[in-house]
Length: 175
Image 1 (cartoon, one colour):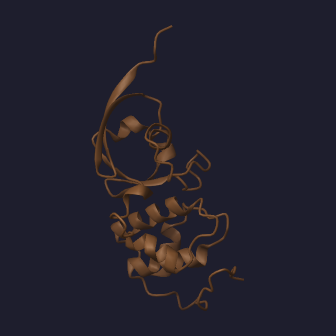
Image 2 (cartoon, rainbow, N blue to C red; image 1 turned 90 degrees about the horizontal axis):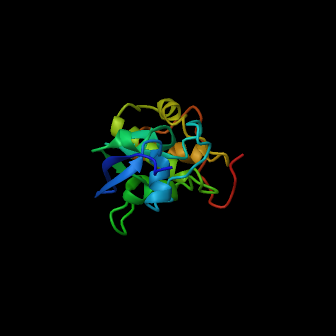
């Protein structure tokens, strides 16, 4: 039995172009994690329901587990590893730190990539829209208030006065 057929793929990941031949069934998530060693993008549900695998393709957010790598031939992919500029964090990464918008950190790379895509889309003008547009990213630890604050800050969305909470005290769980 011969080797499975392979498809040519040229893809730019975090600013670096890669040319390879891969099997047609390899997902973008598996390409990034298993073949390129970029493990920041997480495999959560592997069914497109949790958002842990969210990356940016040509600036738009997608679930990497639901797209085949070959579908992204010629495209530019940005993962969590590609957001920072050297030692300077991306503003969204910095906002997540400032607002303590993560606990276990598993969903954080997908949350941040999704939030960057949300800002790129320019559709959120209030906290309710930020909540709705981030609804495809699940945080099992429940850091949603902090995530909302971080994303809203970078998106330039005014704080939600209806559900305003006091400042987050790092090291505590909001009630």
